[in-house]
Image (cartoon, rainbow, N blue to C red; front, side, top):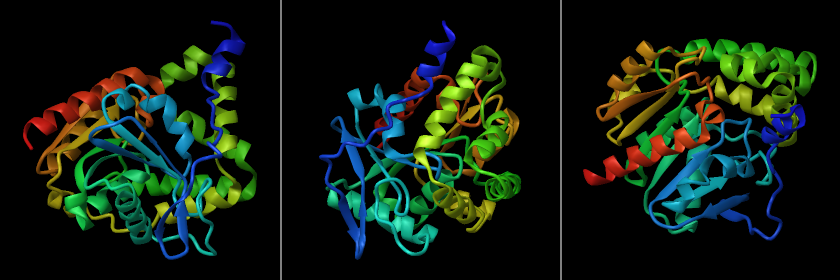
Length: 289
């Protein structure tokens, strides 16, 4: 594959659908939302680095079997901007307001990294609205403190420099060794262009600051009754395979799937394999409903 082809592969179409109406979730808040496919709903949760359009290339196969809903959090992307970043509780209320507006009784939540905390909180506060959880590269549980240390370092880099320098700091920490070696500079540049297109310094500052807040208690996970899949790359710097299985065991109905040679955001490494994993998990969960 040529260098240009590799770079193009990792630069996705992140354009917004301008004819898509915003969805009101609470007083003064409207969210940008994309809904594709039909059937049981899967709702993606952004981790402050992603926007709704980002998910298209990582849920296209799932959308053939389910209804995939992707949206921008309040104060991010094309959603309403408030004077202050919403708290986790407000982001959770926005999600439920979105489900109400879309007439979705319950949904699977697909979360990555920092947004796995939001998925956890929604499952605890609104259990009837959550059919199951897919936590990719999760930061809930014992490793949340390590993740917050990394976030503080990222925040210092952002505030001392700019987004390109922040990306250079983060890249070897969230991308797998295989991806770095295989795609080299073109892959780095392609992902960097996507990263720069999705966020402003203010959005990243607000998101990284919020991600360091919230209850870190491991005991919270033992209260979640929804089927839960930990989707973990075996090259995730935050959580090794052994710790991943230990984390899954904290959930009453948890399981852990290890994705070979994948990093902290495992669907970047293997979008097709990740979607097959999610499809299998949902099919099995639905058999026991």
